[in-house]
Length: 288
Length: 274
Image (tube, rainbow over all chains, first blue to last red; front, side, top):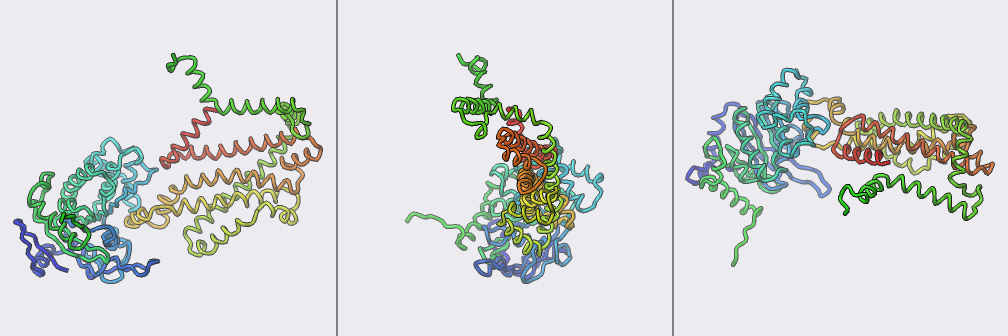
């Protein structure tokens, strides 16, 4: 695994130890520590190597994206960190505890909102509270405040099929936040939305996660979304999924739409695009 | 002029709304006229007016026999729920039931259950028992299959989400699997109740002293074809009423999925149209 530090002027600083250690030392407790993790599946076509020897540390308060093409094992990575599937090799620690089963100290958002169609928006959010045997009454206010904040103020008593995909996904994000977890796992959360809604959701989520002070692991296949949101981007190769490069995004901490048109933003997206070209994931057409 | 309020438009709207009623009346009329003009013997095909007359004449006997059939049907259907739903839960939650019992159950469907009626008769006699069991055997399968598919079709990620919340198996069942399965279960119940009527009547055909199936055989023996048809009308009405009663359950249980609600709305519109 090679760690790459991108400086503001676009130079690449390929210093393996230096950048890695700096990140680790800055965060005394790692939110997530993945060590030499591999995942192999048995399938009809034989043994599939979904993830191969991945190591990754996410510090408290960091926003890290795992970026890669479909089938690169990025969702598998997220599921292993959540303790929903066990790695074949390697160890994972979340919030200082070794992962041996489903991790409860986090919130997850999937690509589908997965709201229960027979529950109202508010009751879908409170499902998290009911299952955790927390006091419903004391969380109701927080649920309403969070729903208000994501623009679902007047929709507490509506059912998921009455709202748009974006609105439902906002409710799903609130459901992941309601119990105030330290860590948020996002598995292509905006992947099912149209491009414009997606941009808005990304910006809104950026501010929400900062205000709530969450550590976020964000799985995506959108280069610009990953660069826009993250402190670091973990680029994964096609199967078997390995960490191709970890890129520190040295952009202003608070992100705005205009950033996307800035040259330094383009530096990062260009760098990732070239990585994907080198891997053969993206193929350029050039006239001879 | 044919605006929305012109007489033509209004008639066409009425025709549209009462299309089914008009069609049924037309068929009955055509039947009546064809039988009368063609001088078809009454014992071959009675005209609707004769069937109606027979129904009025034998009203109390028909009602008495219908009660017996209804009881057999409802008990058979009730048993299919009481046994089918817990069995479906076991199939979904237990590996052994899934791998051993479920395939056996599916394979057992190759046995035409109505042919079991004579065997049951030997063991249980002419009473209500064999009819209930045949009704149960036929109604049971759609209940199990639909409950299993409803309980098992919860999305993988929904279960993952529940596990990340620390949900117990009971939580997952009560809060996700069961409510998720309800529309599919009710679809199974609708098939089951219709099958249960068939089971009860076939059981009566094989050997009994009461019930609409028995009364029908009696009428056939006497060449009282209008009465046979009257029995058919009663059985049809019973089937329709039971089917809609189960459908009401769906409405009462309220809103589950968009699909279920749209289906309900369409059904309600059709019912009003009739």
